[in-house]
Length: 457
Image (cartoon, rainbow, N blue to C red; front, top):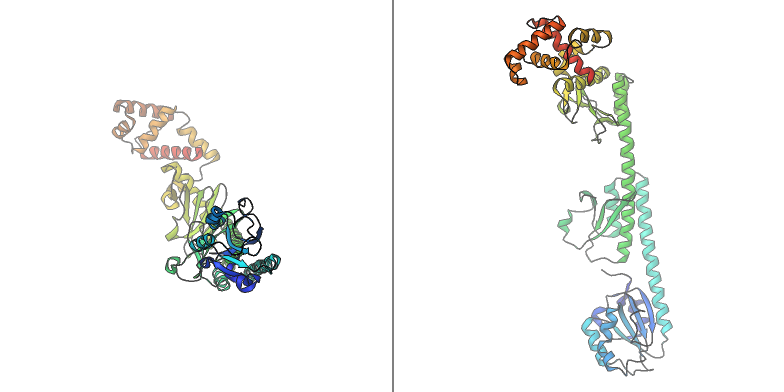
């Protein structure tokens, strides 16, 4: 990897080619970022930085043998990538210790003839650096412009990535924040076996993934800047896709609400499903569960208090409870199935407890008997069965009815003596006027107790 313009490129394209390379040929691939002038070479640490091409007359080098022995190493440590030394003023030639060390560490050292001004070299090098910088910016801008046009035209992520790879001349891989591949321009990353350059994909201040390039010959600053532009466009595409997905899901949610409210007749529902690109199940089941749920791509409408889904019979368990579910005879029956799912939820929790999705089929008999017990009818039932009883006797009655009228089973469940159960049953009969040995009276008690639980829930 290299940034800027290499020393070799400057030899070929600028007045640096008028200088003679005296040492450090192995470092010609080093990249130059700027040009620096300096006369005295024993105090330079605060003035030099990575990527400097140093022009110097080496005022104090000839008289300092210790400096000659360490100059190249210290210059390289300060970030200098090449030295251009003009002889004829303070030095007749570049000292041998400097050349030996420069060869050892691969630091190019040039000798510039006295008649060639430093300004000619520095100006031509700067022009080349600016030209490269402009070319880099122009390349990145062109890539960005073309890829944005693809986004505007509605191209999919795979198309965008393949075109970006063609513009960069290297395979690309786009991954989400969890490392899952979203799109690529070649085989799996592991199959390339190449060095990789990776930049993050950011949208709305969040990390959405990474774009990775696998250049066969390494990469430079141009590639980094261009890849950053690709990542920007990928972020734009991800943001657009997320916005479209949210809009699509809201349309689907509104469609579900219209179906269960009866706002759409069957022909209208079929037309709307075709427009949305969704499929209505042939044997629909309405599922209602508590709270908001993440959208999984199905027919779903999620709100703060309740999530409603319409699924096929084979996928009716797609949502976890608490909640209820009811099958519909068809599209026209969906509003009634929605109501039945609500009653299944309420009755199921009253009978079996919360936590699961209760099927209407499993509670239909209770719904038939007590589902519409309310108002005066419920009050009369309470007045007949539960109102005359203190809470301990209500608890005994509930256990006794649940045990099918078995005194022994009631005693075991309540951890009391059988005589205690006999006494409490007689007391219940005295207070209510019921005969608990009769099946009809026990059934009346069971319905009253169930209606009481439903009213409380």
